[in-house]
Length: 108
Figure 1 (cartoon, helix red, strand yellow):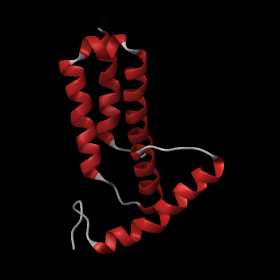
Figure 2: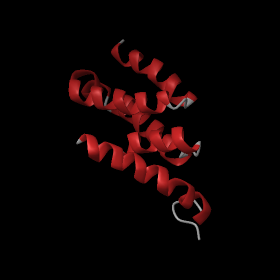
Figure 3: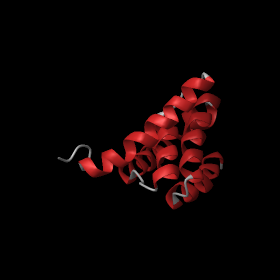
């Protein structure tokens, strides 16, 4: 059965590494985000969530296009956007690398 574009076999391959990651963080008293969990799953299993990556790229591009003045003047928002991009850059997503370079253009 497909759920969120993945079949049972893929979910089975993601379940244990995902749970292990969450347990490790819980023992350290840390919290995580969907982006960090996704990055950990990609590192541990090699299974990429292209849908999430594409969605994040589209959202960030829209924020930069439509809300540039807010992005460049709100340090917390800019930090959050950079954190999301950084997570995808660390897992080797080429579009995130390109988008992170373009983030600097927002200040010109």
